[in-house]
Length: 327
Image 1: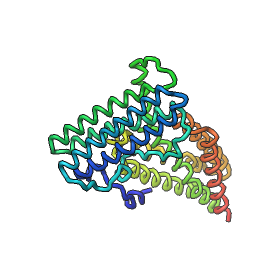
Image 2: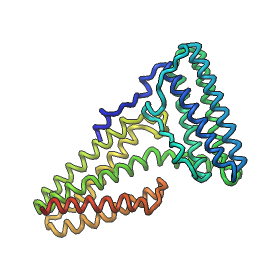
Image 3: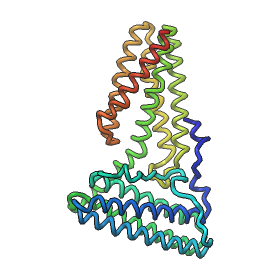
Image 4: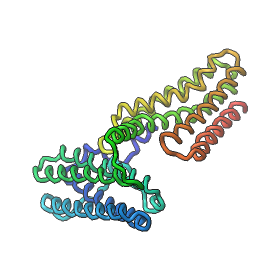
């Protein structure tokens, strides 16, 4: 958890020089052009209109790359630093070609929207950190161009019905809610629920002392909550990824991590060991299925996959804790 903060090799966006900002932008435009061309190739047979839009977007991204290279050549010379967006904290990692094959049009549309929204935020933040007037103007112009692309991407779909403003606002608000609260919260709930199972039930069966078991569970839950909260808040400031305030995300992740651990620790406030254990097992059952349901509803994880990952994984951890404690 916290170890990730000290082992990460990624740079913070604020540490980049103006030359490095241009280098990241050049590499990003080249990658996005290739991605859009791959989408166009994939969609051409069934969705010719959408394929043409992606071809045009790929061509524009390539034009942006050339303009950025010209700016770099004028200011810093021919050698472009080898730094890409995957080297900078906060960028979404782009899927490789083999993971993008056979995506449905709706999934492609959503990914294109996210790509353009992130590119827009990158150029806005980059322009703020640039002192050269010509470079600042170029980055601002590219931000507007990417914003226009995001609107084009939002209109791609199987049906091209006019979108109502209210609908678009609701969709944007829902997406932001998921990014800022649901995803960090679910990650925390999973970590808190699953990672504390083994120590709590190992302590319970080793001591058969409900109060000592509760203290172990409380310390494990609170410790995990603090660790996960700080990790979530520190690894991405949200400016480029669009995931929202790091403080909000950190609180959501930390609180849900602690609650996930406390859920099956609180029954051990009951002094009768077997009654407390039975209630704790029932709580674990509902926790794991609730996490699988949330993943399916808000994070579009197939329900069977979520159940396999969360319920089966949690059950194995629970069994391991009981086995260790009984030994």
